[in-house]
Image 1: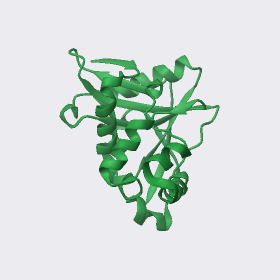
Image 2: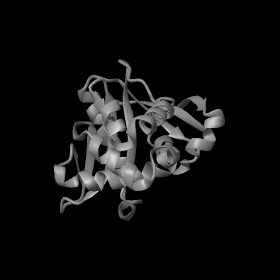
Image 3: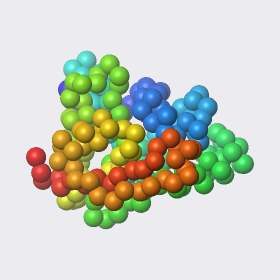
Length: 195
């Protein structure tokens, strides 16, 4: 397995579909219907904020996104939102998504989503991607990696705990749990030097 920074234009559709498969349950009520949500994600993907795992044949197995002051794997601006959802539809969606937004900071490298193709689950892809995230964080001068994991994703939480992440603050969604389909998100951190 090879993990490298970025993806080629021909992989954009696949990355968008994999992203939606992983996060569509959480984002579907706001960014759906699925074809529209996938089209939005496809348009705003930034390959410079993606670490991609591929097999020996070059087949994409999984992606770990990250967020910096320069952008995010799935970013987008108001113009992108308006283009896909119209002025009114874009406005209420942007307002709801802003409630989930995580700020970039100087002290910790912000991981912004990890997803693995269904056929590649259980093959160590997530672990390899996390290793690449730690390497990328170290290259950029960060001592820690930070991520958030939602309460309805125990598989991801278990992976992060196995990889040495420590749980921190828990953010409760309150009434918004009915919109996004989860009740809380736990911030987790890990030093990049840990093994």
